[in-house]
Image 1 (cartoon, rainbow, N blue to C red):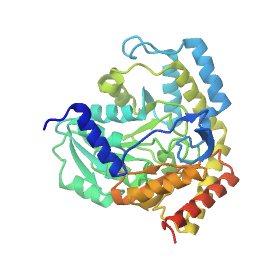
Image 2: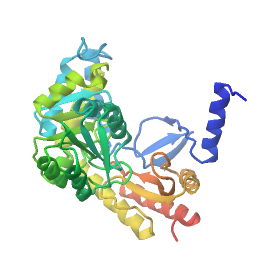
Image 3: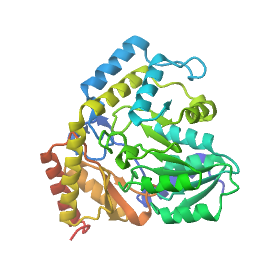
Image 4: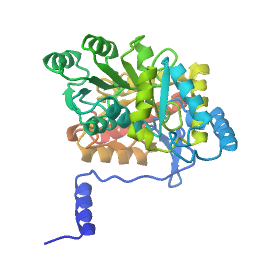
Length: 395
């Protein structure tokens, strides 16, 4: 029997519901802060990427307002047509200076940055070596590039070097790709080792620093600063939408590489330039990171407080080293029961399920911010322990 399109999707959606994989969105009223209001109920929010609490910072709001008044609401075209505005170039210069690179290019999102950079750097006949836990945007960029792709075990530099030593000599370009901070486990890429391998095998190294920018390094400049690295074969991708509290993506690196990307990356060429208000907020965010180091210090204090409490309660947080703390719960059914129980007790931290993580590694992804108080962290720990014991996640 032939089913209509509506009937087909209805059946497939029902399968998602039965497997505890159906997703819905909860409507938040008001700003995204340490607490949010959902259906009139105030809850502690512990799943936001607003790591430094900048999305409501007065300096960002004022900068966005000023840019709106000066430039209007939109750029009106792709930047290679007539949408290249002075404020775009100011943000690129500010980003390159912040990252310690000669140049930078803006993208509409971090996702589009990864797609554009990977597909413009390599193609058919080239070779990509990608960490097995890289973000979906990296995976999609690798697939779209047309290059041969080899996946190396998570953070395993020995396995990576073996893959390079066995092949790739005939490939015009070799590209190693990794997250800086991995988005579901919170561990850090072994970037120093990856740089050595890239230099030894004449490969480019691309690090997606989306979750590290503003968080890692003495000045918050990310993974490269964290390890104290210098390498002319290193390209950094990032986003303004996480610790920087705005929106948009960027790539920072050598002059000629950035010029090539601007000429070849389809997600740059065929996208309208970022809105001026967004650019104004992003410039202000970078200035705040540079002038308010106490925010980063507060964030790391909250990270250590939350991690210590979770370990003491008996939760499995894998090998988290950063503000992303995976609280592993196992199966999707248990995970969703846990997330619902947390919600009922006043904590909003949704469950993470397949395809984002394997079915037996479902989790609650906890993300403290600089704006959370010690009292809020302690309240979160009490809720988590109570619900964890109720469901047998901890003994």
